[in-house]
Image (cartoon, rainbow, N blue to C red; front, side, top):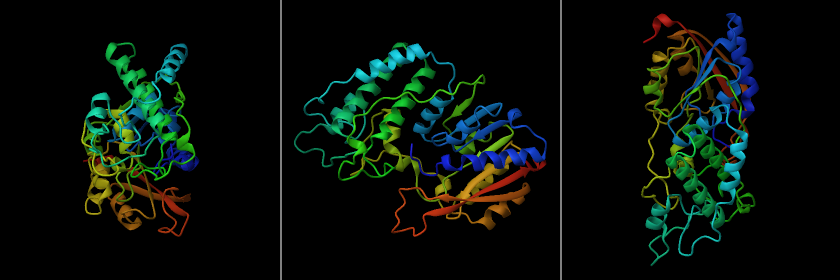
Length: 357
């Protein structure tokens, strides 16, 4: 999934930097509990999953919770998976039922779709082209079937999350957007015209039971502990709840009143996206963290500057910083940003645990 702030291309940089930091203190990565508290699509915790003792993954966005649950489960039956995916892939009535508007306008269960997107007397002023009619109908049918299996006890919670994560990844591949869901494209792009193929996400088996949360960072940080805390908060004012609201709607499949042309759903704004609150939010996270090693990813265009972060980190222990040039997220307009790359900084704190809390 092409994702704002994705660390996929920085994976080698992050892994080597964290390994070298621990090696200086003769600490083995395999003995550590690793927490990815702004997990997003889970790229970083997947990188460390088979290298550490345990993963703690968290993100306040529900689509992220589903993705991280899906990628962190273990020991699924491949034979049962094949049967389930075969049934889901074929379980679609096409063409769409006449008079209904499906996920290309917005998402929802059958009652929600009929109530909010029924084409009658021009009650709906917007045609929201996130997906083609075919793909919208198919996503609807798959989502409803997965829920019915869960409600009837045909699948357990782990398999439920795995199937939903697979649906989110598959739907994203044929979405008619410029990488984020803050808006849809006026014309269907080539990839959006392809019919959705529900594809199983990779299974990376592990002998460890990992922890996955969907909590506010400052609430969760008081309840967990470990060895390595990796922080990858939003860098600027772009809210993930707004930019990925369609993924939340597929994941939650709830009733709500869509807002405006883009069908935006209600979302909670982050203190890390506001200039007035970001410094205090970050410092509270560091102060409350029961982790000795804290790594913060932040680029040179963030709300906080280098001096602010260094000053904050030095209050709580020994500090270091390393950097690497990084390609800008492709949805950023070249008309606004003349440079095609940014500098990604990794701020490193070895915390003095006596200063904890």
